[in-house]
Length: 272
Image 1 (cartoon, one colour):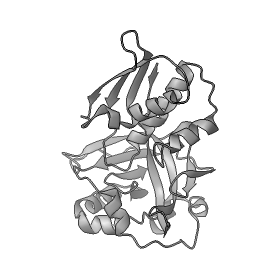
Image 2 (spheres, rainbow, N blue to C red):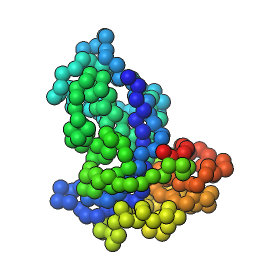
Image 3 (cartoon, rainbow, N blue to C red):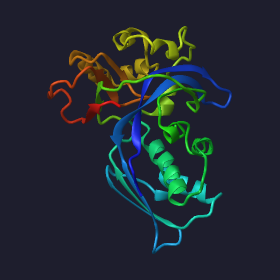
């Protein structure tokens, strides 16, 4: 079974308050995009547990620490199914605020559920995915949602960027998420993102913000420059995704190619 775990972008991100458990409550909109990894899962004929291989962007560390493998173990602890061979082609960059690892894990749960006819409902899969990471559950139904809590409480929204063109840029910079949170002063916004996204996209530049940008841009001016360049290219809205380091621009049509982002990871395409 071959699946294509996709990335997401954040449209707006408000850090609302710090919780007693040390986490933060946020408000954001998750929007799925077409940048994908490739995940193949098959019943194994040779191993008794699992095998895991990867190509594309290098994955460091022990496979047992990979969210895909953790998803496999999580599901196998409660359901019976055969051993599997897992193969991943990694194309979504790490440390980009795009949810690539979370998407891989969620799609692994969905793959096993379908491959072995486990009949786990989407709502149950979301609860299982939440054990793997705060934003893993959003990739189960894989639709635009308004997310609250620590990013794990979803409210359906009506938002379509279909036909718009996305340009995504990631420099070779890693932004520490704990550090990014530590530099933000939590504050509840006066107007909800759910209301702001109903306005024309041309107004988002002045009304929808990512709370991480202030501190991240101060520490990494190169990331801020990418956002300015996207606007200079004609983006109708540009923002950092998550806590960075990727920045995206939304365009009415595909911009002309240029050398502004030479040496960076760049992806783009028409949004669904």
